[in-house]
Image (cartoon, rainbow over all chains, first blue to last red; front, side):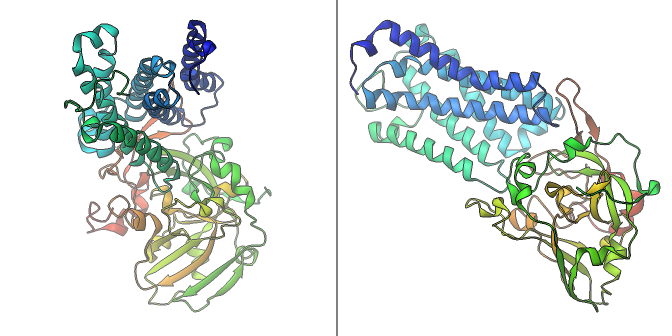
Length: 217
Length: 271
């Protein structure tokens, strides 16, 4: 599947980016529709919080798929949508946190909520890590940070693992769905390990691999 | 669902707003049919509840296998509107129909060695798709138990219906327990076995996560579940614009009837 003329054209790339944006916003549209139609059930706050969290995890995983896709297909379009997918993941994560505070916690006992419950601590790590990544996602910041940008953005691996832990910790008795996501994440991290070794997985350390701006995903 | 004949029992009923029928029957925890709240409503019809019999054994003078209709025949049904508090911090108010559990259990003539009564849900993966799941951590069948004095308390209810009709399958047809001062998972559904015994039985949630769920599982806002606070609950139906928060009461508000059962016990230890 090497790039052909059509696939290389600017219009194709633009269409691809637009479609990806639409797909990334589908979970939100679906939720808004269900909310408006009163289809969230008798405990809508819980439903909303869960759905937003799941969308954030899915988009984070999708973001980490882009670099392997680019390497596999040799087409640069995949990494061109990586930042947008990552920002969408952060956007869903923000809504998820707000929804959790508003509907599940009611803004009460915040200190206890965030210090005594391990699954929430894991979720907080996943979320907090996304903040610096989002703030440094612009072209200008990429240029300014140089090689440090890549080191910093390996924090995405920490985020996705913490998000998965946060997710699994809430399983009450059936972990089939969680295992599927876990397997996906494991495969995506395994790619990084194969390309760059352990240092390619650890954030904030220098990588010993050849410089390649597409290596980090 | 069949219409039932019953008399209301106002002395045992709250006058709080009831959770509407359609919410009671579409929002269920019944992992035998899946772990999502709407799985039971979708799949519980795959279970056949007629005919239904119960095996009674252990420390009692009248063990045996009883058909449900024979068990019910001598009893008059009553309606009790109880609060139901789930350990997940949501709650409902439901008009149940049934008979006092004590009246039912006395007919099996438990002997002096009967310190606990143990209950078991149907285990039939052919009819219960949740039991076919490869990734479930539940060691089927679902098990629950009560101390004898808890089971004989006037609030414990042998339940065969809700909102005037027989129980929908997703709510535990054809009969279930309702123990309103305990978290909902104690109110075991679709019961096929009752056993009187001397030792405290192992119960499903306690087996899965003993640090999170205890044998007693009394509703208690002072003792948090490790994953969520128990101080408040969302009374369903709750809305996004009008979240229906209710302060959780000790023993779910039934302390007057049951607090004496736990006199001298440390409820932090015996959660």
